Image (tube, rainbow, N blue to C red; front, top):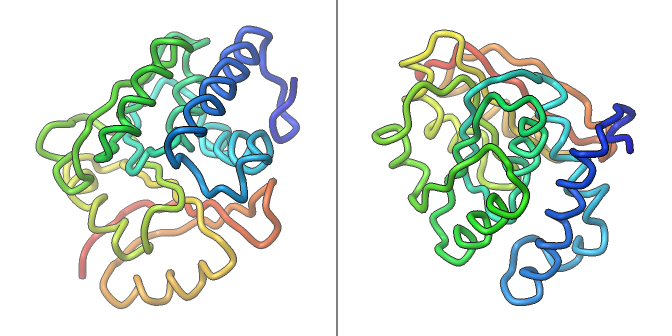
Length: 204
């Protein structure tokens, strides 16, 4: 099996397939993703999410905020499982979605834990984070607000945020309040979309 042109092992493929089956079961009862995208689970969600890990594979400590249906955080945690190192802290304030994520972790062996809290509460209880991810959660300016406490603790801290075609306007707005270094990775899945890699984040 390949994700974005990169091969994954049979074990990882089994974990991903198990997760997708679990997702489809729960999605019948609770709103995990936009209904219009449920039929595109592998391309629109799994492959798209996998780009985060593929940009920076390794045994790192991640925080994924607004984890919802598990994208991208659960996909990162599943890809980490084969190596047996690294961890993803899934932050999801909705209790039903948090329950879905906990069950998904148990059933797939993903390297993750769930925190049923709001994103702004995370810095007080989650420490030693290398990277942050988020997808379809909030504007870039708001995401930076969630990220800043971690950036203050960890000099090499970086963020990986999926953004759609209007990403440039969000970057322009954020530059009015924030100083940051930025790498734009063109999406391998969605034309016109990007993964924004942010480092050296500081509030002006």
